[in-house]
Length: 114
Image: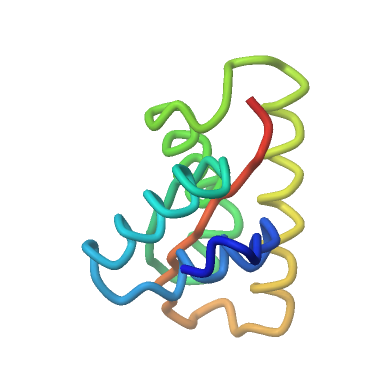
């Protein structure tokens, strides 16, 4: 990882989501955290689009990961922000997808706030 070029939070999240092994994921998380002071978390889940869209499984997975890893504090404004970010991202993924389609999702979370 080039120490001179700080990745954007979006790029860091995408790189985490694209990592192929747990080792690569851990290496990225450590680099982002130690070199660039970017806090990271990763979650994954799968199911049908209909199941993920309407049951809250996706939001629950993101929130559980955010809380369990210490990624966010349990403050109303932070929780509100991550719920809305998750909803916006899911709208982009599920808009033109058949509700019977099965998907596997890996989600990278990044922030530079304490």
